[in-house]
Image (cartoon, rainbow, N blue to C red):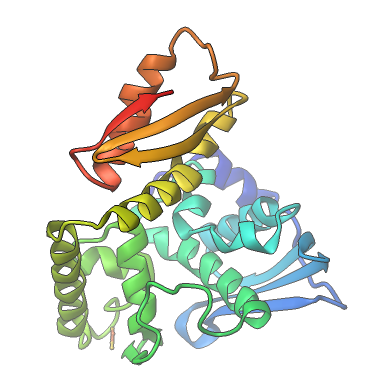
Length: 276
Ligand code: FES
């Protein structure tokens, strides 16, 4: 029996924003009834801001909970902010999902992505994922190569079984499992090459900025603080703490244990972070 968080159960029993928006500005779809679950997501915009979101889903309790929480996450966000939401964010916001149900969070993300593609254009959502040669890998569940690639990348998947849990691919006849393994091999080979190739200073700066913007700032902002990237000098990353973080007695600890350790992990293990 799978264990569900209280939040999953709450959103399953009392789903928020169920239904249809008649004059929706964007509609995203994912899954299909033939494959066992599907989701239709309706967005109402005011300029670039999502002011309302509703969903209709056919699926299990986790699909209902994932769709419900997704609408709560995106209402009030700009389209640019919504673009950064991943299936992991949906699952995290629910307090986690059983591994075997992670595909429900992926379906939520895919429906959002489908809606956003109608606004930004087909190729603009995931620039890092190969968009050209997309093809169906799992015909039982209609899962494409790009969807598998994206699930591996976002969720750090290592095995075919994990890919099945997150995308359903491979979960029926199993004929596609060797192709899934090939995609896993390709992804991790590319990643290993990327990691062993030294970054140029410009690449490092871009990566540092991205990690600060997406992972470090949001955490500091929760406590009313923030951080500004000032400069990169060799491997020395110069930053400035701002807001509540400025002058905080734990500032040095935040720099070393939090900021530096994330930058070492995500950008380059030789980086040293200093506050100016
Ligand atoms: S083709 Fe993927 S499970 Fe059948």
